Every structure is written in structure tokens, then in C-alpha cells.
Image (tube, rainbow, N blue to C red; front, side, top):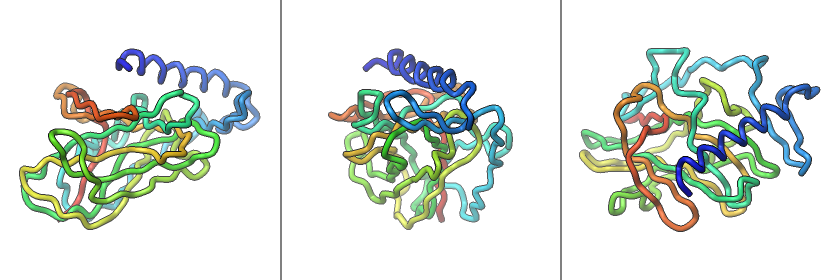
Length: 226
């Protein structure tokens, strides 16, 4: 599917969600005619300040930590979509980073939020090796959950962090991957970074068959370690 078509689908889903939320008794919880529950951010919601408490040095990252009101672009994201979602297609996303020195990754932080689902409230995040310029074997996998559908898309600036101990080598490309489980019906969003809106970087997308790699604006994330 071309990016323009995907963007239209994502924008349409967000607009439909926002329209349906108007006048709801609880502005954050909406039930669609098909029974799906959607949790949405509203003008009444309070943004969560960024507080990652990262004591380890930064190996690589693009979170705009010097701008507490713009840690990432909260109104733009890549879809992370389960194969059984109402969107009608499966989508995983990944972005690459290359350490400048041998290191041990101890924490990965991503800007990711929930859009909708009926049964699934989690996605998978992994740190993967590179295979011929695309995501390869997962070196470590975590589950990211969205209790009560929070944080919700669109919004800023809550992040999700996971800890581990993964050895990475200097001048070697690795990937941070957002994926779903085989029975997932979730639609989540990995927000774009806004610390660099000019330079592009490697992004990979998977639509149930293979990874497609291209260069574009990368999503928001940070990798910490020592």
C-alpha cells in the first residue's frame, strides 16, 4: 500500500474517531456501532510531562528533551496495526540506529500511543539485529501495554520505556521494531520525532510478507546504555 493511501486511512480513522467522540458522556471512552471500544485524547485531557528518569548515557536518540512542550510530534505517527484490526491490514514499523562504540543497551524509550481495538491492548517492541539492511533477528523483545487505553493518540508527551541488557557493537546497524502478536486487533501509533524534520533516516515497514526499507522522517525513540 502506498504511503499516501496509508496516510489517508490513518487520518480518516482519526477524524472519524474525533467526530464520534463529540457529545459522548465520557469524552475519553467511545463505543462504535460494531462494538469496538476507542479511547481518545480530548481537549479536557491533561498532557503528561516527560520524565524518563534515565540515568544511563544516551547511545542514540531523537527525543527533543530540551523542549518539554515538544518532546515529539504528537499529531503524526506510523501505524502499528494487528492482523485482526478493523483497519483491514497488518503493519509493523522499525527504525535503525548505529552505535559509535561498543555498548550495553539498558533501556529503550519510545513515543507510542493507543488508537483503538476491541480485545488487544498491547504491542511488541524489540531490539533487532540487521539482516541485509532490514530488521533481522530480535535480540530482546518486550511487551508494551496501554492500561485503560492510555496514552491515547493523538497527544504528547507520554513515553513508554523498557529495560534490558543487550550487547551492541560499534559501527553496526540495529533496529528498534514495533510489531504485534498474531491474534492482535490493536491499532497503535509510533509518533514522529520533531528534533530533526529536515534529515531523513532508515525506516522499515512490514505488511505481513516482508520488510520494505526506505529513507524518511524517523519515529521518536531513544536508546540508553553504557
